[in-house]
Length: 433
Image (cartoon, rainbow, N blue to C red; front, top):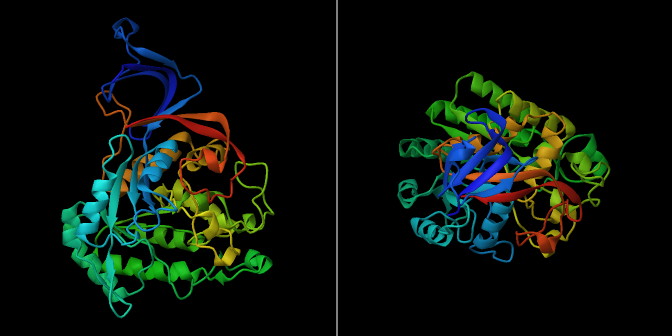
């Protein structure tokens, strides 16, 4: 590999709390030196002027969806890898809701072989907590077999409302010493909802969900966790009440971490009918753009503010991307009939930087903490760092580079994003992995 010198780059590293303009020397996949003596530079060094650019550890995603196997028209593992790298993500954890689902060791082994790409991000695989039964119910998956097959942890990526089964899963999974990730949501209260209850739901005329769809299931899950006292990550937190319940649980000393998604931090129910401009853009989304139909649904403005406050005070630990590709045909239907989810890898960093860091809502170190170090720790991994002798798992980001979101230019196979056609600021320039 060539020896590279990144000159006058702003290095941001939440592990060492570094936020400083430095020169960084890279060689053979390692960080060779920081602010090296110019007289000691190797003769064959390639110099790059990085003034105005950001260098940070590679980003880590807690949970996203792959179309492969089963729905390759949405996304393949190859296009998923390309989209992740284009967004600066060097590690991605894939949810088990493929077809067939990742609920047996055989599927895990198949996926691991398909994910073995030395130039892409490092893929981690969530193993399913449960398997379907013949009568339409659920039973516990063979967690020990999945662990032996190399999963990063256990999650369904969908709500699990059987509390007896949840209790058993937590008890059986604890000795395996792998993360368990739960989405706490009552499927009966929240069925078919496109928005949360409130004035906006009435104005939009959409099927709405009570806040209790999240808070009731979250309260029950927290009590199960307290009983077993095993570590759990709570995903897709979307309401102010959910943040409050997690804050109380952490004060009790329960072994939980929690995350929200990047779109729930930036958008709320006011964006759905195009009344409010999209964050990071001078225009609104098309009215009832189905890319704003998410699971859980977008919260109200008070929920979005509470999620941001929860990150800042440590109640929430990380930001997940939850990249959910869908084809044009799947999303080109009525808002409430569209499958939930949006593409995210290529938009998250520039929009979060522009809307939260440049506005002073978060510091650069905080954003990198929530997108890199914290997700790695939630996955039970050591976070990447900018330090001499460390592997060069890095992303180079230009926060001012303009680019237009066009379907033909995206690395993802799907373009289900409300920012389609918008000109954004901020783009990843290079990734080392």
